[in-house]
Length: 226
Image (cartoon, rainbow, N blue to C red; front, side, top):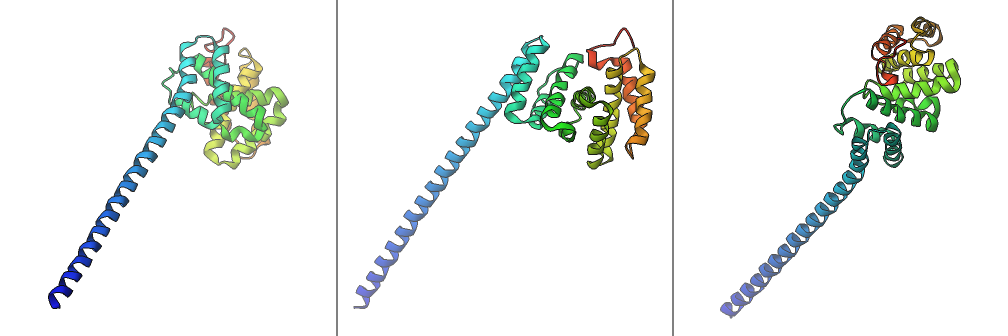
């Protein structure tokens, strides 16, 4: 009887081990399949997104016509949003030159048209702050100094560093707005901002005016009127 009882217990134990073994195998297979499918999903998705985003950038690189480049850039901006589009543009390997600086004005112009003066904080400090420049020029053109005050106040809300960038970009915008032959008038606008927006950095604005005068970024090269 004892032997039969022992054999019975052994058989039950063996069945228990077998069931655990098969459950473990099934569990491991399920994990492997899940990992593989998830990995493939994210890999394929990443490749697809990268291909879509890169295609517009690659087409921009192949074209020399800034109007075509602007159309492609706007297409990218509308699809992925202005902030992500700026990151793509910055890290695309596009050579930094006057035309690409002007092209990046496109995103600033787009942001202003879509979000108004408060949208300036969506600009990133790429390509010599050209998003800020495009944004500010559009703002000055639409509402002159009233819009400038609003834009600078929005910059101030984001902290001193953002206000410094905006103050510098404003100097570029003032000279482009006044014209390259009117450097003193642009500097006067920087000076006037001190009393209009508390905390404004006039020195950064002056620097923007002088930098614009030297490099002529808004015309893609030095102006004959500088």
